[in-house]
Image (cartoon, rainbow, N blue to C red; front, side, top):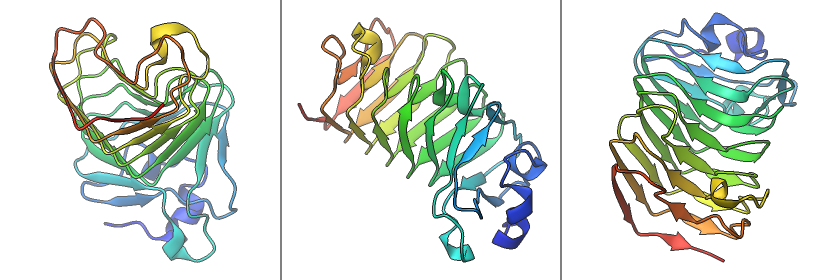
Length: 231
């Protein structure tokens, strides 16, 4: 069942409780609340390993009184801020993640089905969203990804994901490190069996050698439609 704000005030505000990791029940909503109104700064990455189906991690806790609308997830020593390492089906929504220690903001490394939506991903120290060493089917939609030094979103090369859908996202001011084609706003690499990239808005891509949307050397079946590109 749905977790309410009172129970999550103590269970989830360190992102270490079982409700926030491996044991959320199928069909439940886990509210990632921040009752103090400050961001989560962890000494290690937050790895979600849930194997159950249709679990939603929701960062919008505004219905629960004096909660921050979004809790910012970061870390001081991990290689990512948030990683999916599970095998079930999960939705991450209304999440804010930024900063970190040499970190991808979000890393997809498990299996199953993952949706990342309605979230704010910014000022990462590596990639915004890395769909890497995974076999998951992944949808990334309705997010804002901003001021990321390398890829805003990248899929492939490290694993063999399922079908990847990237749609209706705003990517702005990314590629800030200026180091070539690792700085694409959206990159599809090898190993992706199929992808759909549509209706994304890309503005002010920083890298001189990076691209707005780059299929790289992929042999996957990629469909790119309705691109909206800025300068």
